[in-house]
Image (cartoon, rainbow, N blue to C red; front, top):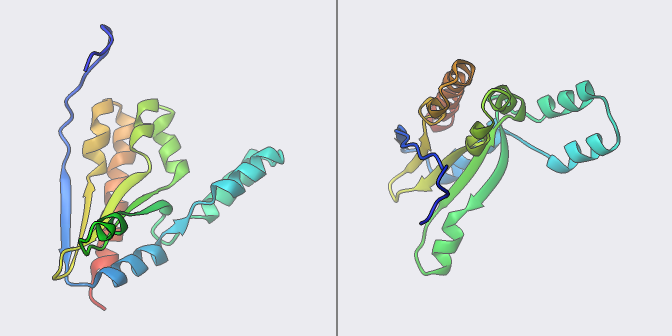
Length: 170
């Protein structure tokens, strides 16, 4: 690959985490969906187009968060593609986060928008379920910005709490 002469390349060490649970895949997905809200971009766009006040739009976004403080932006069924190719698989990649939390980072380091929302993979491994993700603080550390780092550590805690909640046996 030929990059422009002024391109900057950084090698970023990332902590990848894989958590295994005996909780069935379908229950993990149900719990994840129950504890995360759903981001409605069309609703936000409508409100902005209608000229609603910033406070009103922010309140509407806040109301989209689930009990975990996160909302889902995307659920990509990677298992569906594998099943089309004859390999039975349950695997869903979720993009989760909170736009107002992301804004705390992007106002300091716009490049952090590449990693918000966070990516969480839920996959059946035949004997249980695995959840895989990159620790937010390790991903966002590349920006060398203290406020971004502080928010990223808070995301570590929020994500850890969500993982603990959805993988516990009931």
